[in-house]
Length: 185
Image 1 (cartoon, rainbow, N blue to C red):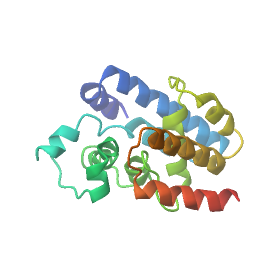
Image 2: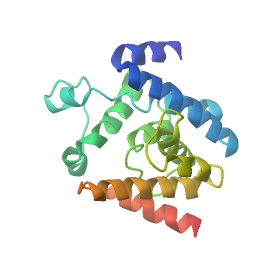
Image 3: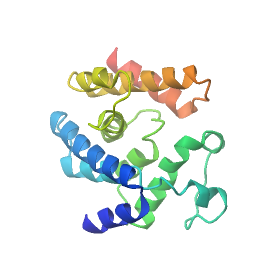
Image 4: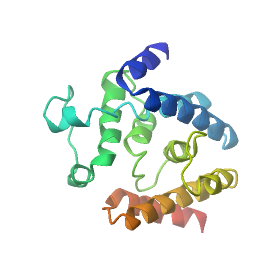
């Protein structure tokens, strides 16, 4: 764990490093509430943003590891770091747990039939204590009422925000929302 923290400290901005620690703590707390493996949630939360700052390397062909990126992720660059992060977690940190890798890869978009860990990381990223955007308190309260309900609400808020900005919405997000909606109905 210390080696990972050193890597993150050396490769992320101070703000992003503090955010990663906060997401890890929040993920552990959510895991406890929802009877999930706390260590696994902490690790996934800690490294969820390890791909931040590597986007330019990827776009210039200097990213160290081979990776295929779907056309939507190439068009919606703010989600690129999540895919790069999953590769870094596997190659740099030797993590081979598919659930952790998927939680990292999809923490910005969600996806069809998200696992509990994927929901925990998606939600923890949005509600960690340093977040101050409008309606974050609503999400924090929702997180006490049900994992799928809170993740769906978080996704709805993200979609509304993207629509207000006239930004593209990744198809994975639409599929994630629809399957979460089925779970909470």
